[in-house]
Amino acid sequence: MAFAGKVWRLLVGIKDGLGLIFLLLFFSLLYSVLTASPSPAQVRDGALLLDLDGIVVEEKSVVDPVDALLSGQQPIAEFQIRDLVHALDTAAADERITSVVFDLSSLIGGGQVHMQALGEAIERVKAADKPVLTYAISYTDDAMKIAAHASEAWVDPLGGAFIAGPGGSRLYFGELLENLKINARVYRVGTYKSAVEPYLRSGMSPEARENAEALYGALWEEWQANVSKARPGLDLDLVTKTPAEWIAANEGDLATAALEAGLVDKLGSRTEFGDRVAELSGKDEWDKTPGAYTSTPLDAWLADNPVEEDGDAIAVVTIAGVIVDGDAGPGTAGGDRIAGLLDDALEQEPKGLIIRVDSPGGSVLASEEIRRAVLRHKAKDIPIAVSMANVAASGGYWVATPADRIFAEPETITGSIGIFAVIPTFENAAAEWGINGDGVNTTPLSGQPNLVAGFTPEVDAILQSVIEDGYSDFLTRVAEARGMTAAQVDAVGQGRVWDGGTARQIGLVDQYGGIEDAAEWVAKEAGLAEGEWYLDYLASAPGEYDNLLRALMSGDAPPARNGDMFAMVSGRQQAIIAQAQADFELLTSGRGMQAYCLECPGVAPARVHADARQGWFARLAAAFIG
Image (cartoon, rainbow, N blue to C red; front, side, top):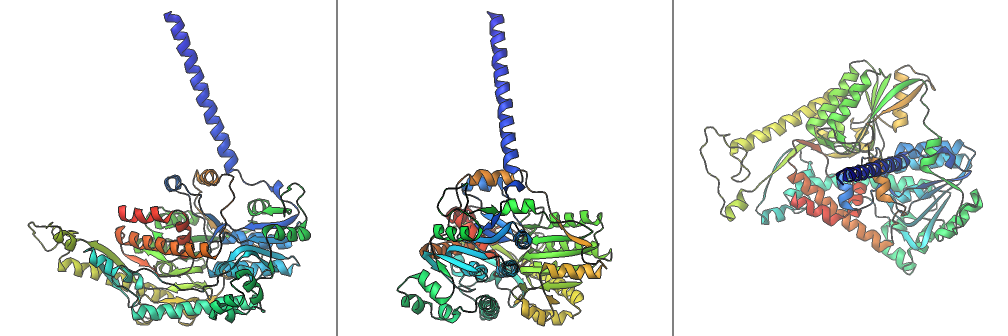
């Protein structure tokens, strides 16, 4: 019996072992399938379908496994602007593609600079005699900037357009913090450094309002000019100056109002829109769904049309998102990570370097770490250009200072030359609850900082002095880079935010242009002829489980489409609450000196809106729980 028992346990062990091996093989195969690149065989003659069900970004972010699993929400899709532009340009020249279709029903946004780049690429497709069609349930500002360039812009009969323009309100917590007996100790330099105002005031200061009015006014003028040029028949004054009367004249029918104003060309359901595309590019014989048409998705098209890498390399480092200490990113600009990418590129000896910035700044230390890494390239005597996307402000401008030439678009948000720090202390709340601090000090700094008893005057003075010295360093770096005096930089600094057009006039930017213009300048300076160079994007390896997590969280379910006007307005309200969460995180996160433009518009609202869709209540609660 003992022998039989041993044999039985052996067989059970073998069974369990084989089961474990098969499970490992199964999940390995599943991972391989989910992370495999799209097959070029998926490319079909017909339409190129760009279903932008998320955010247009400069650099895709990684999926945090813990956040993804705890949120229980599908990760927001991200589309790199350079991928979209490359897809459109290759489609224009490829005879297999007979039309381009944008589905904008779930577009969250992407910023004016990115939308303008898409619009220009669309014009190149149209110049190749290929129609471009857009469809949405409801058009927002960013979606409309794309649709304005379309050959045919369609909207659902139950949808419409909601053109709000830049601007809006943010929450101020000064009175709340006072009621909670929390002392938000703010150390700053800059009359216009309004990032700290939400912790001190109940509304905007006159200086912040003046800056915001000038900035938003310039951005709005650019939006109107670009959209009106692309769609000459549009009655934009009717849409934006008297919106209530415009809608009332059409008896509340937003879709018809959009059609009559010239915002869109056609009203129709998704099926009717699909039938129209099928007329242009062929009906999908494999798909019996009403309105199906032959199309190629973005991923498959990019896999079939890789970027050519012939000739000498011009390195491109992307600084996207908030600049933070450490190795964070992509999608967040970890200073150590980006400096490491730049140092690794030194061994490859690129012919030039482009710093592509789409960041409101952040950590002073991380910004300086990146700047020093750029200087190591500058020591190699290669041309260096900065290409600014939607926003390159505060720390985003700090990292731009080593460049030989700075390119920006009129819609770029830049400047915000100033720094600050925020530290909450709780001496007032502690005293009300009967909690007191006492002890023996040998120097004015003993036991400091004391978050319960508060700071001594000496500590307050030291911290403010450190901030003032940091601001002086900022002025010096900008002055040396731009051929200005520190006083001249201070006059356009003080935390003031500028649009790209004004920034060029005051000397913070050299010329208008996108990354293509920056690349051509670098190539010329490096003595490279056309066709003899390519852009080598320095990038961190994607997360090991990034594609797997996105695929598992997405499943087979189609992306959630934006709803009607009520759903859109509700989503914007949630975005305000998500912004409040970000403000509280800045107050409680214990970060160091910040060269950060918290008030900068641009791509940030789109990301905040995305966060709101991923469970704003849980995120807001997390800010209080820590």
